Image (cartoon, rainbow over all chains, first blue to last red; front, side):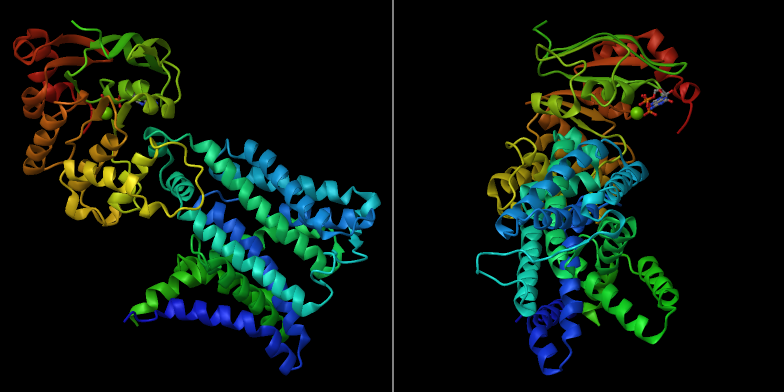
Length: 314
Length: 255
Ligand SMILES: Nc1ncnc2c1ncn2[C@@H]1O[C@H](COP(=O)(O)OP(=O)(O)OP(=O)(O)O)[C@@H](O)[C@H]1O
Ligand SMILES: [Mg+2]
């Protein structure tokens, strides 16, 4: 009989908890919980997509939130211009993110290391300032989403529970997709390029084009998370793609565990729940959170998931 | 002499003021095991770098199998059948030995834009990879993380990686570097087997191995070929003895 390892146990409990959360929130009479966890789930999708390029591919993008922004602006602008169908809005959000990722990736993937980090950051900041300049769509202040995306009666996004389950289903789908991807031929190339790019070339791989496709896939998934985010907040603003948001996504991935399928989800839950809990205790919560993150990053390479994996013998 | 599989003409490479390759010409017929010897810093690794495409020469031509490959990117040369091993072990440390070699097989099994099927279940990749691992004698270590393997095993895996790309020609940069006498002897046996099917360019400091394996030997000093002949004649060559064999200690700048 296989023993359920501590790590698997945590994942199972986490997934079960996420599935049952709306029921608990109802019973406990705290709708706030549902709101918090909808946010967590949406950002976990974004973090999972970042994990694909950063954790598995070694491409540390410091501008990944740009696709959150592009996805949400696609929904926001559509709604503002009178197109409220999600069947138009969401594919547009996805396509726009893919296109941006293609352009950003094509240029930034020619560089390595710190240069790559800086260029992805620069592109994101550029998009941020462009969004601020969009006076028609609220500029600096952003704009309120008058109505959530409509799906011809198939699902009502105004129903908080239904919306939560939609986000959760998309998160599970994303995790599954990334997991299949990294264990495919394509995934081996991506991980090989992270591990030893020189050898990859020597054995005959044109590394750049595989990295670029990977970069586009990640951006596309994150764009979908952006479309969800706009619907969740009923609001679209440049803040969605601010560099601190990109930083949050990196922290989630590193905290939860890079190159681990459930790492980004664990990281998103840990970071946002901690933020919430600490900010309830003291207004100086950042002073506590900062050093905690630092300790985990310094002493637990592999993040929380890494700790759990090592504890299996305990 | 038959049409050479590798033809190098007037190759030159400078690093600032250093002339690492100096008007170097070389013709290797198919099936030959051609050794290149020379003191540290003679430009042996630099030559391999230019042959594989990691470095571009400042002048000269490289013809492989009739194609001018002088400016072809690294992966295209690999596709044409040119494979190398590295002097300083260069592997995927966080993969198992089998995953390493299977990736090399995969590089030559069509494109890798295949996103769904579990790669570790693909017999078409695993079987040839396992065969290459067996050839270098690592079969019982196939499923161990490369970072846990010994130095000698890394050197063997270097060869398996190159083999797995099903090359026409192997460029081996000091395959025995840092090996003990026993491991070296095994490597000589492996190379003796490979020699039957492949053209090999062998760079090696281990003279015993070189004289045991080589059909012809080129002696490289300061980027220039000062002699190219059979092992017996190289042994007799006075200039070679002066420049290298007899005075290896003097000619060695480091290491
Ligand atoms: N990238 C580089 N930049 C500058 N100089 C270099 C570079 N690579 C090699 N050289 C120089 O070129 C010369 C030839 O170096 P190379 O590594 O080809 O020698 P080698 O024959 O392989 O030596 P060894 O036996 O130590 O491996 C040396 O003087 C070296 O310092
Ligand atoms: Mg060398």
